[in-house]
Length: 244
Image 1 (spheres, one colour):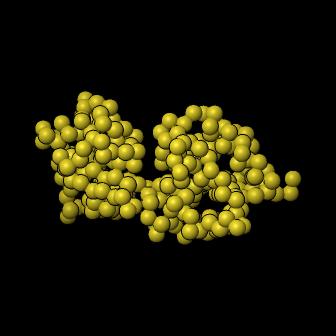
Image 2: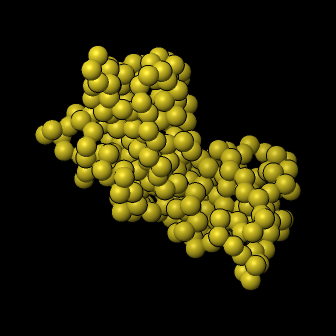
Image 3: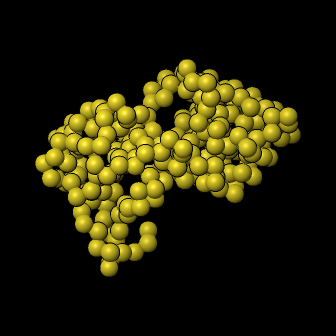
């Protein structure tokens, strides 16, 4: 075999096409094969919507990989890895699109592990992307942490006792993929005056973006897979900050 293609995990950011990195654009334009996750039942891929302008289907193959948002089985990742590996072993580079960053709750990490197990010699490169966490904080214009403060990132919270425990040990808590139970727990903490900051952000940097600074403005039915909450028990000392 003369050549093995390289597998690229490409983070396309939170939704604004202008937040694609220069390296992501270069890899997308140069890769002969582009894989994009597509939620089952969806007509398109959010990651592809961001990156589509940089993909030329007249010279590149665009392949959809169906996934179940938040709950894809191991067999799906194995099948995707096997499909991708056929192109790689044939000498073609493959770019795998991932919303946000590939290694932060990204679907690429599961495919990467499977490809590594199947064919350890296949080269893999990860192109970082702007995360929904940092994008949400920027859209709300709030600091996440400063100096020696601690940040916790959780995919979901299911009870008020758990949430109180996490807040006691961290200065800022980010809840991703917010569900109704998490909303109820946070609403109770907000009503009890236990939060110094509570920010709801949905689909940051997209045309459907929504930013609210109180859950009183949000109905539980308005949450979706791309919603998050940024909570804080700490007051930020603006005179003693430092970059992180």
